[in-house]
Length: 292
Image (cartoon, rainbow, N blue to C red; front, side):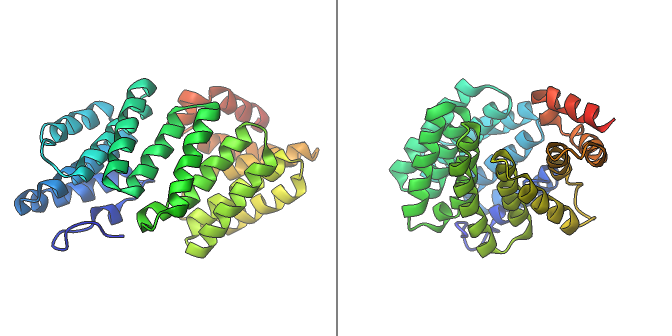
């Protein structure tokens, strides 16, 4: 849904979350026109999204500096730039590991979005609160977000359903409730299939397969992961997590020799993932060991 003024480009449609640096350049190219338009709300929203590209590149100081510029212009601005400011300030804090500061920002975004009846951004805020929380509190926020997404007439809110099914599925999975997780992942897959976008469909299938492995249905899981590998476009990034899953399935089936090259490939790809290096070093050590 295009919420931008008719005379100005819909910058949200330019988002490529897998390539934030390229998205940053596209957004910055719109700045002169945004500034010349005199539409302060549009300019402020655009700047919040540039800040998000910086945060995704882990350039947290630059993101905060840009958000400081936005904050100084928020007095008297409409609700949506203010909501988006709080969302991106919170995301920047959260990505830097500052969860308490992030929580305050997301709570502000949630309250303002609800008051303004901006359901899509309210869902976004609730889903971010689920990320900064843990345990039952995280599940409660995700379920609150899902209820709003399923019942809202606003398309921006309804588009969140697939992501929320995925997030709730992982929460159930983390709690060991694999059947509930599988139900959520299958709902996500149904939505992704209806949308018809290959990337999200593949991710949803991967999640179903991962949960089947947790349920002990290893042969089914392996068949899905191998199919994903066979369908992989060689022009896309190497599927590190799929290599890892094929290896794990083969290992559980007692096929250690077959598993080894998949673990090696997984390690070669995932060792380049800055988040995994920082947060799951033991997982990478295991992959390296199993792949040797």
